[in-house]
Length: 88
Image (cartoon, rainbow, N blue to C red; front, side):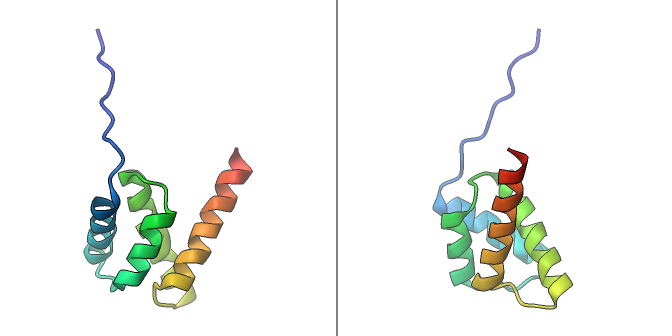
């Protein structure tokens, strides 16, 4: 008999910001606190979403040869939103 998988509760602002900061640090990316705060209040609140967001921002920064800042973060979040709306 299978047990239902336990779901982790959505992280609060502090935990989510720390997960983002750790994800960026693991990739050796320097991202300022303002950008992390911007992402924290505008992103889907899950550990998987944080991981995916860090990956998308890293890819966008490399492709466009830009630093990760609030402007790039807004562009990436807008692209994610557009993709999600197109799927649903």
